[in-house]
Every structure is written in structure tokens, then in C-alpha cells.
Image (tube, rainbow, N blue to C red; front, side):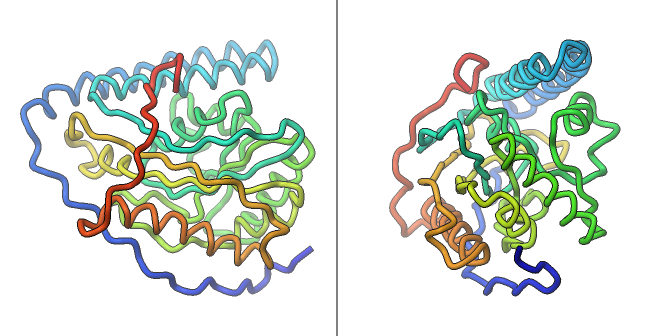
Length: 289
């Protein structure tokens, strides 16, 4: 097992350009924002009860409830006429664990990533503060085989991630990690922190990496409790799988994953660059998300 006492910090990569500033709110943005918030909160409240009932019938029933929860959370985006466009998605082996490594722009990233592979019910690494106080989210984090860490206690965090990695290796699950460590509400990409990913890879040696870029979801929280631009598009790029044996170690793999995200964000944001490759539109409804 590799040591985590003093991991080498990754070199500082060229920052992706910042996104364009949000345009001034329009009347339609204000008009549809409140219905969206009400619908989003209703889904959370309804599935808080649904999850608790489903959990009484076992983990399979609970997993189905969580799948429906995430589908309906994405369905609420249709109120704002927001599209989720997906490029990629590659077939996965049933008998292999995987680790989704993604940038993080808003809370909606979680249902987006979950619905990429709903049949595998991806699990998440989250800060322990989310374990209580949030309808449906907190219950799932505590009871859905996710990983809760104390970001102020590195030893505890690495220990929990180690146990989590052993679980996904044993049960051939999908883990999800946001190496930035927190959401980028302004859309600016933060440098990836390698320690958590290193702990995952050390303890899940057969896992392959699924690099994912998310662009545009930051607009949902850029104004915090203000209106969201109606008709926006969230782009999701799923990159080809990365095998651990093709890299000299987790640090190099982490660097390569960040470079992929930076290239994608640059292609979307830099005016002089050609547009990003056309993506496959995905209706974020319960039947297709």
C-alpha cells in the first residue's frame, strides 16, 4: 500500500478560462424560478418519506427509490427549460468496480452523475455535515453505502475513504469523487486534490476511472437564491475509461483527469476555440435521464 503521509502535490496546471458572466435576469427567469424551487423541494420531501418506507423492505427497494429520486430531480429542470446534453457513455463490465472522477459545479451534479449509470447506483463521497438536516439527501448518505468524511480531519477522511474503496472493490460498485473538494459556484475550475483519489485507487486495485466533465450547472447556484437563466444547457462529457496500469501512479492519473476537464472547459469557454463537439441531447426525465 502506498503511503499517504506526505503525498506530492500535483503540479499547478494551466487554469481553464472562467465562464462568461451570467446575463441580467429576465422576467421569464423570475417567473419560472419559484415553481422550480417548489417542485425541487417537493421531490425532496416526498422521497424522504418514500426512501424511509422503501428501506424497510431492504436495500434493493431503497436503491430503486433513490434511482427514482434522482430522475425526478432532473425532471424538475424542464420547468426552467434546461437541457442536459451528454456526450460519451461507455459500456461497463458488471464484475468490475469503477470510480467517477468529475469536476463539481452545483448540487444538480449528483443526480446527473447518478443517472449516467442508474443500474449501478453510483455512491458518493460527501462531507459529514450533509449527513443530517437535508430531506432525503441526508437519509441516503447515511444508509445508502456512501462515504462521509470530516474535511477538517485528514486522518479520518483517508480512513473512511479507505474503507469505502474496499467496499466498492468487494461489491463491484461505482464510487464518485469530486477532487476539487467543494463546489465551484462561479464555474471556475479548482485544482484537483489527489489524496482522496489516491486512497481510493490504493484500496480498489481493479477499479477503472471514468473521467467526467460538467459544464453549465454552476448557473443554477451562481445567484444562490436568485433566478436561474431559463433555457440554459448543461454539458456532460464522459471520457473513455482510464486503466490504473496505464499510469505510473494515482498522482499521474489525477493530473491526466484534470487535464481532460480543463481541455473541455476551454473548448466551451474560449471564443477563439471551435465549439465543443456536438453532444447527444438527453431529456432529463425519469424515463431517460
